[in-house]
Structure formats: C-alpha cells, structure tokens
Image (tube, rainbow, N blue to C red; front, side):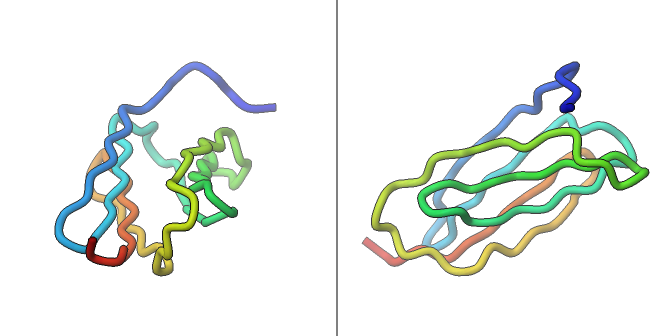
Length: 87
C-alpha cells in the first residue's frame, strides 16, 4: 500500500530540445526511478528498505517521440531529462 503523507512539487518545462520533469521536497533516503509507459511518465519512489511507496503518473502529449529518460538526484530534487524533437 502506498503512503500518502506527502506530495512533491512537480515542474515540467522544455528548454531547447530537452523536456525536464522535476520533483521537489522529497522524503530523505528514498530512491527514485522514471520510466515511459505509452503516453505517461511514471515516477517511482521507494523507501530505504526498497519498498515502493509512490508512483506518480504524469501524462505526456500523444505522438511525441521522446528519447530515453536520464535521471539525476540533486539535493531534495529528482530530475528527469529527455530529448524531444525541435518544433
């Protein structure tokens, strides 16, 4: 069962040809992962014991050709970067 005692601030932005999804105010010691699932970005959170406690579903525009997500943890923020075609 997922814990619902927190919800991060989520920002989505496009800078040049990069789509950036940023989650702030994360619980200490948690692990994070991102994956594409159709037209959604799934952001998984796991406790220090490795138990998944959150899964955020973020809709993405249909038909958008995205590159593989690259992730990084910066202090209290988890970032996902993906290449998008230039419009």
